[in-house]
Image (cartoon, rainbow, N blue to C red; front, side, top):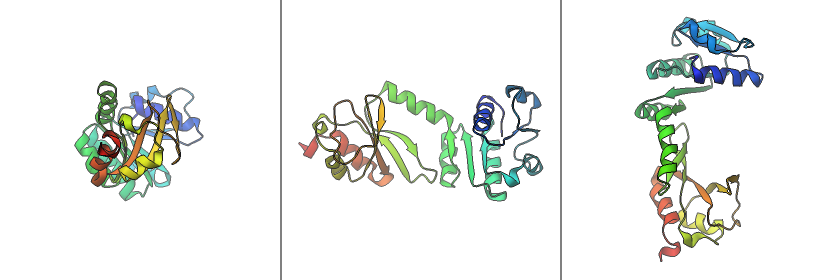
Length: 215
């Protein structure tokens, strides 16, 4: 639902992967963003109208993305797709961060546009401290980028994991993502991404940024 820049790009990308696509937008002019080669279905109407959704094929859909410019429309249509029509894969784009957090707890994955952009700009401007880069749809498990104290350089990954009480999800080394193992030796310049839950977030952050052994 939504044939703006995000919706039209998403439709083309999915179609290029062999998927059958239906695009809903209340403004028929929006479909001009689709290429002449687009072979999917276009439906003019309100994306949270049940009849419009049925016309678009919601009853046989494997996935539904609500990416219009309105938070309310996206949430209502996403909940209809999930709760009324039983679509298993549903995602909604949300501009309001607080709303996004609420609906993630209801099991509807969201892309909070403002939060996503601000977090990534923050990582470039102020690299100090931990930065959350991922949170699962239930808002239970997250991945943070945790800067390392220099004492950890030359130490095996297992030592950091034992002190932090959690696992390293992955490393970035020389700009390349790496699935490290417990024997991997930490090096200066490594970016370390840790798995956390909210109750151990401070513990993990402290373990990574404090001198090894609390010296």
